Amino acid sequence: MAFDQSQNVAPEDVPERVETLLDSEDRVLFIKGTPQQPQCGFSQRAVGTLARRDVEFECVNVLPALAAYREALESHSGWETIPQLYVDGEFVGGSDIIVELEERDELASALDA
Image (cartoon, rainbow, N blue to C red; front, side, top):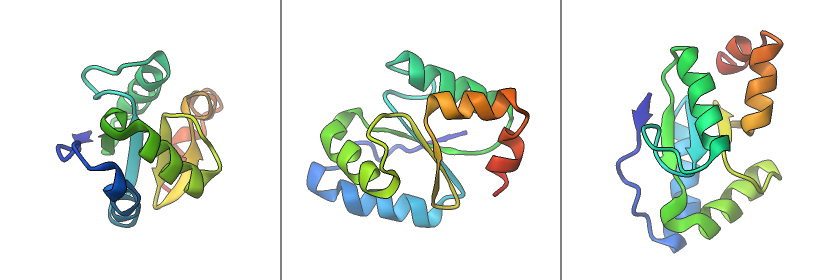
């Protein structure tokens, strides 16, 4: 799991940042907080579920520009809540979807998409 250190993105730069991440990273998880200190239970569940899979993923803290990230991500996914997981630029789901995929033994194949 990598943690995106360039967290202090100006709100007006967030849409471009999201595009760049989705184009350049295989797996991106947008969360509230950091993987080491998630700031909501949903982010904690998503990080924990993915970490148990032992796969590499980029993790982005949306809190420094929450409204801008929420708007930019919703334009991609139609989903307004955080966290959001993307694999190969495609929206997979939020925390509940990640957990459901894991429970159905489908998360590994979703992460390999």
